[in-house]
Length: 170
Ligand code: AMP
Image (tube, rainbow, N blue to C red; front, side):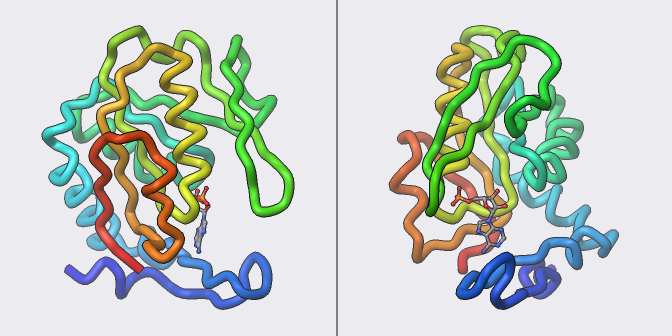
């Protein structure tokens, strides 16, 4: 199945010069969405994760069903101030300014195998910040999985040295 054909390209969103990869057209296609989750799970089988971590908010859409299918737990990484219990917080650089991501301190027990999942890797800043949260929590990062990768931005170079899976390369 051609998953890429189900992703819609929106020029100049959210600002001029960005070609936004809109996954809503993939998600509403029942067979396409199921096939995407199946393909990601198949490619990630060897990671044998105890936990799959997804980043707010589009990471949740892929990480949660993968966790169910792979028999792993799902852990959300959220924007600041959203988590109710004590959380680790990591600041990371954006094109202009900085942002933060947070994860509950008791979300991942030391030594547990963790897979990080998001819809797109662009510069890798979001995924690298999430990897730092896993490190703070004492988890063992075993890999990253992305639906798509903007290869020209070379985001992989900003990630720790663990295997990286992606289904689509732009
Ligand atoms: P980055 O931290 O630069 O790797 O950006 C990754 C985050 O931004 C992901 O959570 C994506 O959802 C989003 N993102 C970045 N660029 C795009 C794009 N061209 N189309 C859709 N989402 C994007």
